[in-house]
Image 1 (cartoon, rainbow over the protein chains, first blue to last red):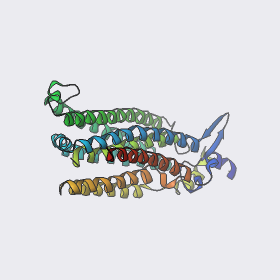
Image 2: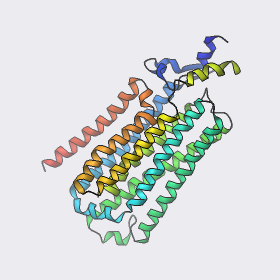
Image 3: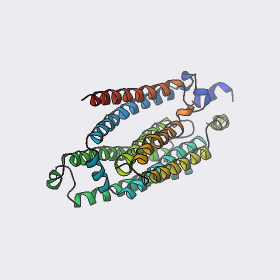
Image 4: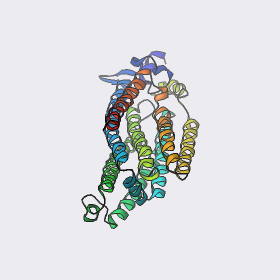
Length: 227
Length: 100
C-alpha cells in the first residue's frame, strides 16, 4: 500500500490541496482520463452563463419596476407571499440535503447519501406542487399569459405578470431539469457508480441545484416581498 | 480496492462536515426571517432588505454550499467577473435612464 496509487485514486474534489494546485485532481485510471478540477471548472462556466441569463431578466425587472412602481406594487399584492416564503424554506432545505449527500459520499456513508438525495427530490417536488397551486390560483383569477383579463389591466401590471410568469416559469423549468439530473445521481449512488473516490458528477449536479436555489433567493423579495 | 480505503478516509477528514453546512442553513433561515420581517416595516425597509440580505444569502450559498470557499482563486475570479459584468450592464442601463 504505497502512497503513490493512493493519490491517484483519491482525486481532490475538494479540500485545501486543490487550492493552488489545479492539476492535483487530474487522474489517469487505466485507459481513461479524469480531471475533476477541469470538470468543476466546466460546470462553473456553464453556471455563469445561467447567471447571465437570469441576470438579464433581473435587469429588465429593475428597469420596469423603476418605470411602473405603482403597478408593480399592485401586482406584487396579488401574489401569495406566504407560499413564496414556504417555497424558499423548501428550496433552502433541499440545498442543504444535497450538500449533506456529498459529505455522506465523502465519508462512504452510502445509505445516508441516498436518504439525503431522496429528501432533495421530495423537497424539489414539493416546491413544484406548491408552485402549481400558486399558478393555478392565478389562472383561476384570469391571470395567465395572453389572458383576456390581463389585457384589461394597466400596461405596468401586464409587464409585472409577464415578468412573473417568465422568470418563475424559467426557474420552474430549471427545477425540473435539476430534479431529473439528481434522480440520475440517486440511481448512480445506489449502483455505486458514484462513490467515495468518484463523486464529481454528484458535485456538479449539486452546483446546478444550488444555483437554482440562489435564483429563487432573488425571486422571493423581487416578486413577493418588496412589492 | 480495500488498499485505498484508509487513505481516502484520511482525505475525507479535510472536507467540511455535516455541522458546518447545517449552521449555514440555520443562518439562511434566520436571514430569510429577517427579510420577511423588514418587508413588513414598509417599502423603504423592504428595498434595503432586498439589497443587503438577499446578496448575503446568495453569498452564503455560493461560498459554503457551492464550495467556493474551498476552491482555488480561478473559480472565485470567474464568478466575480460575471457578477461585475452584470453590474456594469446594470449601471449602463440606469445611467442611460437617468438622463432621459
